[in-house]
Length: 296
Image (cartoon, rainbow, N blue to C red; front, side, top):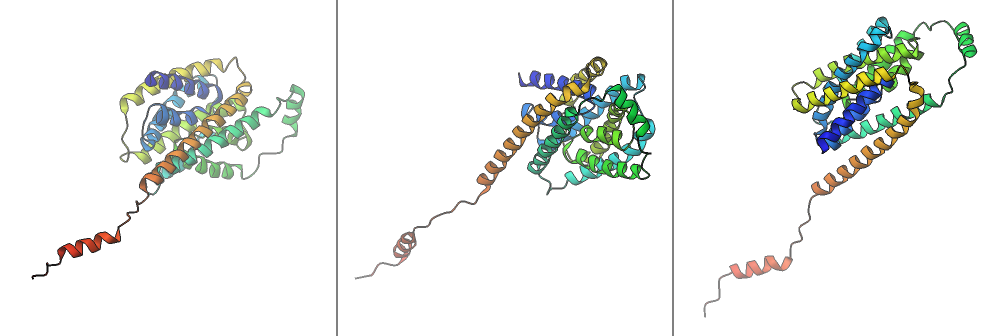
């Protein structure tokens, strides 16, 4: 039952990636940990494989429609891949615990939800306003590429640490700093997420155990969802879905944080040293019994 439920969630993950260019990777980790019962660090490695391959599949229809910006993908993607590898290497250190990773993941999920809701709350500009915006835009800032790469390293590090693809931060960065249209940003973000996942997986390689059977079936289900989501994206405005999806992420993030805190408290209580109370009379009784009896 849980196996089938987990794969239904995998299809939903793919649909969200195809429609929004983000969000799906945020759902993959809690599904693998809390539904499939996979240990956290192994689940993060599996998440990187699933999200990387699914994002790569999702790139195909966007590429066919011309929604890819190769130059921006190289500039931003090189920085995110470096950050993802370094973040994954950091996560393999023994002092980075699974509890810390899940707590950081919950915070990242809340951030993703907040950005989605904020973007969805903005009303779509009218054609006249869009035309005015085109002619009144300031020239591209001289150091936008530097800010783009700096954010790329930060987003990539988060990918390596907790398996989050980072589409929630990549898409607005591509629009605001890369100066590319939203549809191009969504397609380009999928290509960047795929690169992040590969780099992050290389950082984990040899330090975790992977369930390959589950990884393949989960990836296949999510890939089907991505193709479906990319197709539906032609008929549905992503803005209409972002707000509801953002509130859904808040609910999932709250569950993850509460569950993680409960597990942390439980482990603290189980590892607390037990206090042994020694009866002082026991020592005296043993001493008395050990003394030789008086000979009459």
